[in-house]
Image (cartoon, rainbow, N blue to C red; front, side, top):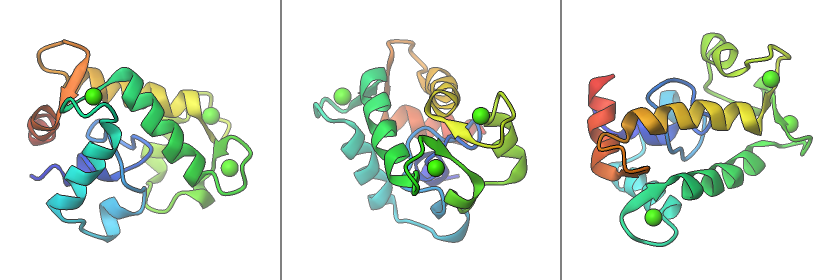
Length: 135
Ligand SMILES: [Ca+2]
Ligand SMILES: [Ca+2]
Ligand SMILES: [Ca+2]
């Protein structure tokens, strides 16, 4: 398995998504490894080769804003392309049919912590690849 799935899905649709280039990409398109790496590099704003929690949060905030087409602060199914009902429901903790940023970040942080193999609070591209391979 490639790191593609990890990096594609913007909303942490399953345990295999930490960083994302767009919700739609995971199932419909196949971005190149270069795209994956670009997405990682974009999140790594201080360029130390690792994505920490603050960088993840900042990156997710940008993605969230981009996906939230009507700007109401929630992501709804019509604003997301490639989610499945099951994964959407898993992230939508309070079951109101929309995803708040907190709900998205909670899912992201779960993945982040699981991918952070050495527990230093930062995730390298290699850790993401390994994490994905275990899924
Ligand atoms: Ca960094
Ligand atoms: Ca919205
Ligand atoms: Ca919700």
